[in-house]
Length: 433
Ligand code: CMC
Image 1 (cartoon, rainbow, N blue to C red):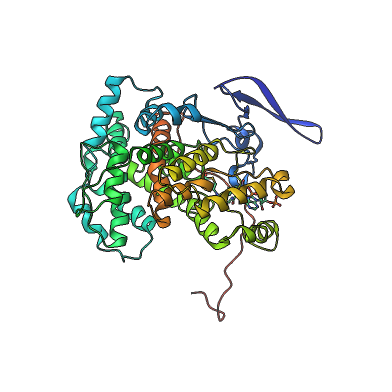
Image 2 (image 1 turned 90 degrees about the vertical axis):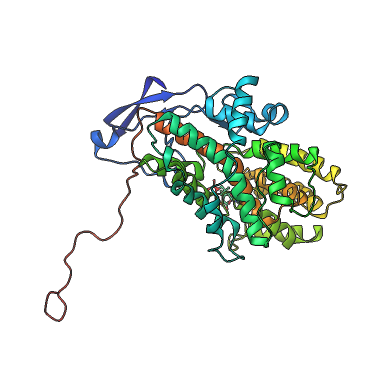
């Protein structure tokens, strides 16, 4: 980050202070307000951080107006076409794509850590079978810190790398276990001969009764879904991970805080909500009713899978997800899938509607992901856990970047206090307590 311009702050024509303007490699410049309070006695007010850059980062860049998403400079479209999810993981963690030797070593390390400590399986029995898988996932991922305290020194890069590998390797195993537990089926242990995604599909969808042969088209589709979810700069869950990590909390606790945040319907919970919404709409003839509900200020209903804080253009991930949807449905002979047809028509009608045009509301990544996951045989209550599985690497990359940053401080926002000013507690019955 560099600066050569400054921003002047004045009140009633009087100069209050001059603040440096920082610029990155691309994207909007930022006003450096770090000394503002010290120099003016004032804070800035920005609920929802709509105008605040909370940190500098080299990981992911989004141009929301142009619909561009880059991981470490590479366009998401190229990564989705030419790379595997594990290559993208390596890229996000290390800044460069791996050569074949680096990839072999990375893949080997991940494969060798896919099993979880057997004692961890006891955790599941404490949950009701009808618990939401995300509720179980939050608890079980958090519990990992109780098992892997051999490498919890966050100041050690070696320890941080070990935690990164453990998390990327074990989260799919835990996601699959959450599903198996809630359906009453036996846990499936990982198999080292399988690729990352094949292994996950087997743990998730197979039973010990039958041989499982993953379909390569579906494996590739799921791999691509994970790539599309791998990172998205300072979104709510990533910012949560950074804030949790800023206190020095251990990586498992930090990733758990990200999972908990992701669960919300405005964030990762939207993919499950989209499928529920499409099922509720049920028929193309009912779309106008739901479009009107979404536009009605007196109705809480929002078109799930539409709109984004940063994208004011078509989310590039949604485009790729729609293409993946076609591929998967064709492979499975489901090209007439009712929900997909409904989604395409809903998108068409919304994109022609003035309300959505004026507010620049386009389909986001979650709009089509639920339909693909549903076709892959993944139940809707697992959709957000799938998102968490893809995003784990992004959370870790940001956590690691934050800890390595020499300017890193504990995150501690201030506030505009609007409560009662100092007052005395009244005496009760004429007595003090
Ligand atoms: N349906 C109807 N109206 C909407 C929608 C929607 N999906 N999204 C935004 N609006 C309206 C909103 O009512 C507001 O109108 P007004 O200016 O008249 O008050 C305006 O558009 C701006 O909305 P906002 O809530 O102030 O925008 P935001 O940037 O704070 O929220 C969002 C972004 C994603 C939370 C929101 O668009 C939303 O709730 N979408 C539905 C949930 C969803 O699909 N979430 C997944 C996001 S992408 C994956 C991820 O990152 O997790």
